[in-house]
Image 1 (spheres, rainbow, N blue to C red):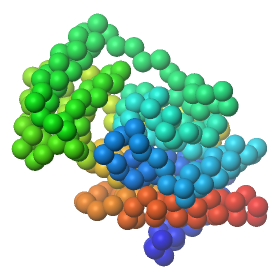
Image 2 (image 1 turned 90 degrees about the vertical axis):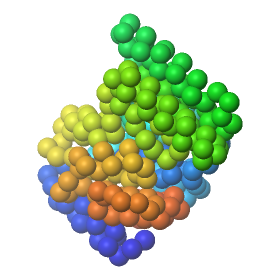
Image 3 (image 1 turned 90 degrees about the horizontal axis):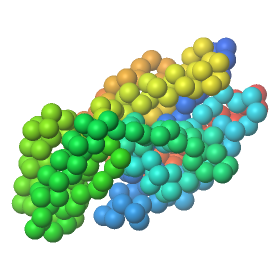
Length: 277
């Protein structure tokens, strides 16, 4: 980990420790951040280092009197995210870019029900049908169904099939008056307006209320274009970390999930040091 990033963590933790009653929210994307990107989304798993670091931070968050909270913020379906991330009890879990929310408990995930209007349900059906048509006859391209969205996956498709399927997905979104979110080999279109930036704003308010904290400082790590909306809403006193290459609004950058694991391990060390001081 770079000295610049280590200094940023120290500065954030020093401010967190000295602010009277301030809280720290550690919010993390999953794929490409805690887990390497893989062709089969169901096969995605955290690195061993990330698993250990996440569990340490989860334990610190659960400790009595510690104003630390942990959150997973992903484009994955909520139940899918909870299954793969195995969040420690007390962690917030945000799926579908903020459309689905819940919190891990010792007995499983306590989620907020998501209900569509009749109009939204009809639009989602039309969208899904259009995407099914877009991937027909295009090997490696497939459609994922979510409670409020449909996702075109093209990671295993050839260049020509990818271009054609993406164009069809964009056209369907435009026709239905929806926004197509482009990520790494995916195009997700939702019938509910949401973003990771809005999700983080809500999480900050929830944590402030939960802990009766006058301020909440946030560390957020993400790797994809959809994470830029999260970086955009964070500012002074927060730490934003881009994982991998590409233009970004984040203040810091690390190379891959292994580097994220090192970062989180260092963060846990600093939190434990502050708690013990």
